[in-house]
Image 1 (tube, rainbow, N blue to C red):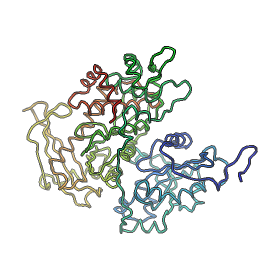
Image 2 (image 1 turned 30 degrees about the vertical axis):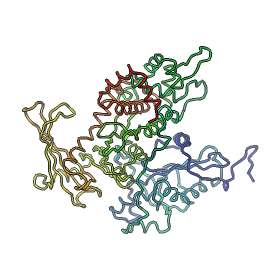
Image 3 (image 1 turned 135 degrees about the vertical axis):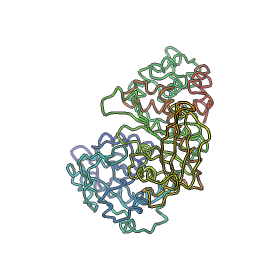
Length: 593
């Protein structure tokens, strides 16, 4: 029987149920968590699960879980595990990174304990079904200045101790804010503490690499798939569908027109049969198909959820490259928008680019400092990396991203090492490369480098001892010597760069490692430069709402179209071609992929 409070029906705590959200509820969950949780919410850093507690269809509470924190001294001391074992088993720990009781659930006695208990009983099984391996331990952090952690204490969690009070910055916990938090843990399986510390591994703990399959949904036209993007606009006065507006923005970008006003002007040049094919609105009074105004284009750019748009573009783009062997990942700051915003705020994207073609396969936006690594791990969750090599710059030299690629996704890594990893950098620079290198290779001819200088490179490679470097998956270390000069036969300067790779000697020779390192700069030359110059990203004045992120996502989509259809053309030439051959540009949007 329902309890009564005045004339309103009050939820009965024993009737509250918990479930995973459905895919179509993700945007609603993210928005509510961002609005009602004190820390807000952007995205999970890597693997995660979203739960909702409901009663009679009404949402009462939200919970979010992601992979456990990379390191925390109270947890490591409590478990007593060796560092090598720790790195191999972090994926068996989940962190309750978000938990909020919504307004509808406030005042319901014991609701938080009921919801947390339901969640803990099913968490490991749900993780097994989604990610292919069980969980052994749950953890969370509580700010003692604001909360006492009563709900965790009531659920038999173990209080371990205080964190050091460091915030994440540029992928590392280096900014000390002094707000120490209490760490709590809960054994999801009996004896989990002993098993995690035991050196003996278990077959059921192995990760299942992400497998991406494409069916009829992904074979539909780009115009149809644009309809799947979540429309966040108000229903009041909405005259044009979101898919139509996005399609017109993409079509304008293919012709070299960027921004709301340029898209409106370009749309007005389209003929009636072209507007009909795109699904534009029919005006019964004027008896013609009409196009959106510049303010409609601007509202769509500002209000559309970038995550929904980026995931749709990623589903459509990945089948364009049949068997990519090497992918480059790097972040880019959207400087045009950042010059016009308040100090401390910025927009950035991280993009995954195919080496051979420069085609962007996926991207994610982020706005917090140090968010590039988390955005990349979130991006990789929807990419099939089995048998592929991901090249990273020094900003991703930390172990979290590398371990995710190798252990969770079945890929390989090649990463450049710089001074931001001082211990590893010192070890590599102090090696006796001239005599100690096991393999070497040198380019015979001078080539033009990215900065228009002449360059010739040579590489030295050796297999490091497992205890020499703090990277358990490092199979080879390398040093590249760069000989550069302003003009041929001129004075030559020499510099060195260092790196590590999980590829074994049999999997990649010295020459192939050199090619992979050079191929990584496709993300700069084929993506960042083209977005900045050919697509005007750095000149764009869009800066409000989600406008900068959505503009960057559409630029990546336009690049994917141009590079896949006209790979031998420069981007400006391809834009000129599609501006004069509009029927072919329309077919790119209307024909199935």
